[in-house]
Length: 234
Image 1 (cartoon, rainbow, N blue to C red):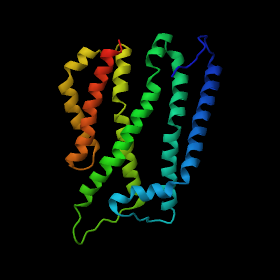
Image 2 (cartoon, rainbow, N blue to C red):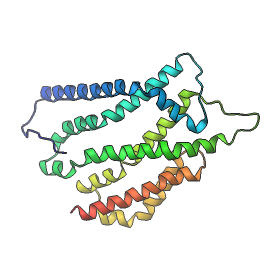
Image 3 (cartoon, helix red, strand yellow):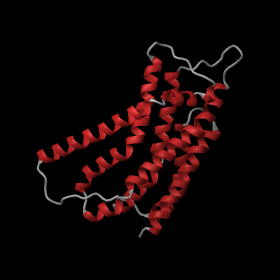
Image 4 (cartoon, rainbow, N blue to C red):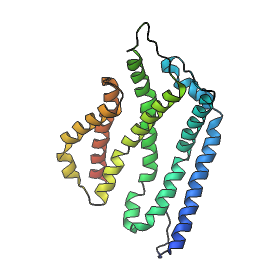
């Protein structure tokens, strides 16, 4: 995705005006996305509650705010391409033309990888982790999950997985900027794999091996994908 920029020097006032315009555009896109998403937050909440069989709310306002948070998160996801583009268009002025051309693909790739991470968390990790964790209940200690706490749990995992899936872009960007090189990364493969499993153990709830593997294996695959892209993009 190319960004057309003028190469002239901008004054501080012009920079601040551009920052203001891009912030307003990004926030407006999130607001529009939130309004669009609000109409199906009820169905989304019902679908998210499936792994636990149902949720409860403990305060009169909890159900409303849970649906609002869902709409806000979905609105952010819908608006993310616009938000990322605005950030990129503002910061790209500090980069040379050659660097801008080399890393402009990061915008759509970042969005797609973030979506992939969120889907893995919501569709695979959350149902498995919840099933494992609620199994610690007993006949007299039954789960009664609050909608607010459960949605916060799902959201934190979704964001964490989406962030982890940015690994290839971070490595490729560092390689393009000359900070790291493919040969050095390849020699550290075992260290990266070990760090990936440690990170997965810390980011997934409880000692659930399936959830940990669901994050650790993609980390390893994303690392290898990064090396592959580095190899054939020169």
